[in-house]
Image 1: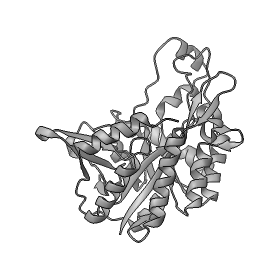
Image 2 (image 1 turned 30 degrees about the vertical axis):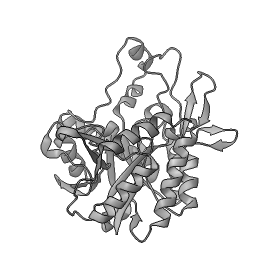
Image 3 (image 1 turned 90 degrees about the vertical axis):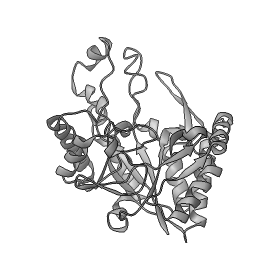
Image 4 (image 1 turned 120 degrees about the vertical axis):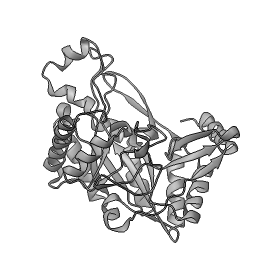
Length: 329
């Protein structure tokens, strides 16, 4: 049996405010629930689907948005997630910190998008950001997070050391299919790895082997992974006893937003909804081989073990492109 984690990044949206601050404002809970005709095609869809198949997930909740919205909106979201039996952990996008300045509108109007980097920081700055994010998490939940994920899956050694120093025992900071750490020694594709005093459990990345020794690296996401490829990779993981595997998704992936300064509208993305539901059905039917667990559970259940790379061929990559190209909302 192998372990698999369904991870969801829970974020409010900037909604064009950084590029057109005179016309747009960040969008809060509505950008997560994404309701159309009384039905949620965002967070509510995810929670309902997990409940239908009796699966648990880990929701990495972004905390710096509190500089704009205050604590209450995300607190309500996190309390709902926990009330429905899931796991909430710490997620940070530093770009939101622009709103801690009373003159944020003037700063944005003057030009320049705020930095969203969690890597390339000095130790003092990294400590400041992590302590601020942890304090917000503790305010809204009453306890400290057990796991951390940086925005955009950017990480370096300094960030790892600071996370461990501040007492967070686990991280899911890597997604090699999205971003390769500059230090080659840090790079991990999947599994559990002891890194500078904490356990790193990256978003799973698989390898595509092409002609002439060429390789591509793709992350295991709902939007990027058609059902046939999910089945192939998960069966390969079971055969190799690779794990834990981590799947990544976002509430925003299950509908498209037609942006309007006053009343945005959300159109269901039936293709992505179908993918997520089929994945959950597959996991429900294969409980004898795949245990779906959360990061909180993983602190006790997961252990470091050999993690052979998950591999597919060029034909799989081409089919992936075709499926993703023709999949429509």
